[in-house]
Image (tube, rainbow, N blue to C red; front, side, top):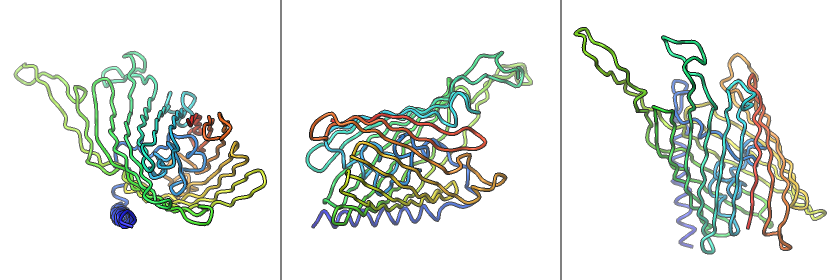
Length: 356
């Protein structure tokens, strides 16, 4: 009973903080956050239905949607995903790709610890300067975004699960680096005769502002007296892209061929972007095949002149999961997802998950 009260208190605290975050955004702040790669889902499974799984995300895939779902890892889980962002090398952004690798391990009967690394690269970009604006004449540079995440999730009761993530953020080129830290937290509640009804909330990217530094923020010049001097620019601070998610899902279970149809909905309140509304479904057959699709809506998404995102909302994906043991607890799964975009090309993700 004490654990239940603690979870209720934590749930109330997260909700209060989330509501404060939800009303903190305004039109004057939109587009002014840094580290916006934190708003990209690198996992193929969750991305396949618009990251609508705040209430029902499970395993390492829950790192993005709601870390509380990490508590459903049975023993050991290893996952890798590669994303060709907005078309990758064939898109308008040369070579933009995301790699994510994660490892989760159950500790005791109720807890799970996990870590994952997400790295985003943009290929080789030509260096162009004021004195030499010709592309290709000055070599290239390769920006890299990376965040390292460490998490713990706990099952307080069979119905109540919670977790938290600490993430270290790094953005760098050869001579400029920015770094920061952030916190995610989330809770899931499961109920029903067959645990078919699920609710979830998560608060993401809470942390201090970031700024850039390094030799790239300075230049050498000659003053009026003929002396060499170094001038250094100070980087403006960037707030992190805080957001609050609240979601619900319901499983329709069919005994024949072990079928399941999950319907899910999600609302995302962004402090620095337009709010998102998402809905999706996932169909599972024989616990081996899964199809999913979703749509993410925000204001003006149908208005080409006024919308503020290249993503056009349509998402789809599939999973093939092959059991490695007779009991079915060990398996390997291949995931694929597609996210539509315009005028850029769509985003493709492919990943694999091993459960031991």
